[in-house]
Image (cartoon, rainbow, N blue to C red; front, side, top):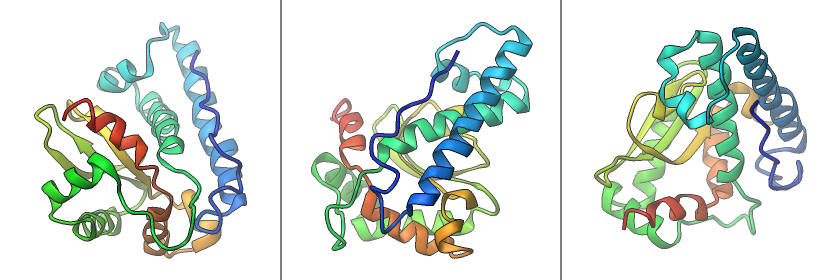
Length: 201
């Protein structure tokens, strides 16, 4: 059966940008809820447990219930690792190869941020915004509905993802999704995309 990824920091570590209560609820209620539901459905259907990435990439073979809960489990398992505590409140700029590829594919970090913000704003209802890399090394920013994952649609790797479900921000930001998205850039763990990009360049 699938197991939870341990949160790599304390619930309070992402303050002031993501509050302690949100992290506690997000991890223990939503994330672990997706995991429990996924494992229950796998058992109920007597499916053989397969690596989660194989389940995600063959998700069209499964029910909507498995799709939603597998996506919720997998997306959040990645999301926790894509964030890190802010060292200061004066910005958190990309480093290393992420900086170079962002400038190459989007012109500047500001253009990259603006494109992510626009995707987040246009995502009607719940979903995610992603920075992905294709097999040819081209990177794109896309959005997906609900708990769908880019690897359900494309042969790609995921460099970054931003959860824009209300449960990710509502306790602190209320209906101001864009304030949350803008602030989450202070928390991006640039080592995460760097490790993936280093396989390509």
